[in-house]
Image (cartoon, rainbow, N blue to C red; front, side, top):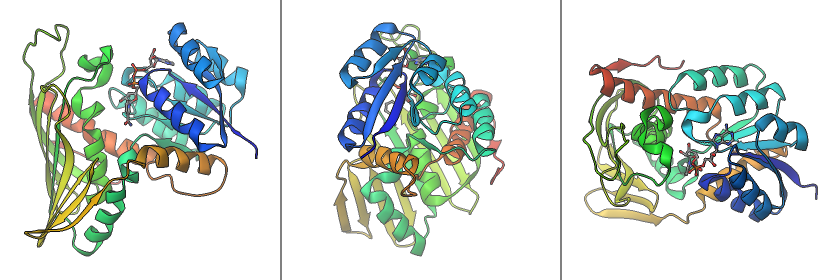
Length: 324
Ligand SMILES: NC(=O)c1ccc[n+]([C@@H]2O[C@H](COP(=O)([O-])OP(=O)(O)OC[C@H]3O[C@@H](n4cnc5c(N)ncnc54)[C@H](O)[C@@H]3O)[C@@H](O)[C@H]2O)c1
């Protein structure tokens, strides 16, 4: 079987995770790794049997891959995607699509016009409970969605700076927003408040460490999102969907459906992170059409996350152009 040749842009934590999953698929070869930190590129290249580069253009021209993974921090998006679009190379890009909205809008337009194959790291769409929740909500739509992400500051230096990560909602709780959009539909308006206080352990931080947002979905449902990075570890990350007569609670660990008593409890098999890569590689190979969050869908989610960040900063509601 011909191996699908994949190039990795970025050689940090999530690139290593994708490399491990891709190696396990059996029909993929990692051909090159680019990272401006030469030691990071060299280490991942050595572990994957690939060639190391310090620059995206050199990586793409030197390896001529079938597809690429963009696994850079939020602030570093733009240059890698432009290089891929220019060469018409299909790509998988990690969330968020940027620290802000401008680059993501530019790339969204650039991939739409030629219809370039893209996928993104919104792997919650592949969790076992997600399909079941969509099935149940198709019969009894959610009237309210309540998202909660209670966590720590992740151990990457760029995270605590607003201009590097975009902040917790843009970088992290965006998974919940994506789940909400997938389960409930477009968001038409948000209003958020957030606050920051000095913490001795994070002297350079300027990201909010608590955020509360209210959402109005275009279809009439309402929602809320609470996020904090004040805790020593992840204590909860999930979405509850409230319907006429039932509550669905979806998290990384599974789906609970209750109508007063628990009527269904399905544990997640932790395959979402494998499925998201399998679906992209299948699409690159021209078989299968199960990319559930192409760039355009991820951009819709990113717009909501950025609108929440803008609302918290400016102290005013933000109206979104639904269906843009
Ligand atoms: N979907 C998920 O579950 C998930 C999990 C973890 C991280 N992520 C996302 O993946 C992204 C990366 O996270 P991470 O934990 O791997 O960060 P990281 O800091 O561990 O790694 C990022 C790497 O990208 C490199 N880099 C920076 N600019 C670059 C450029 N222009 N070209 C090539 N490489 C460049 C850095 O030197 C670093 O080695 C973040 O946006 C994060 O939100 C997603």
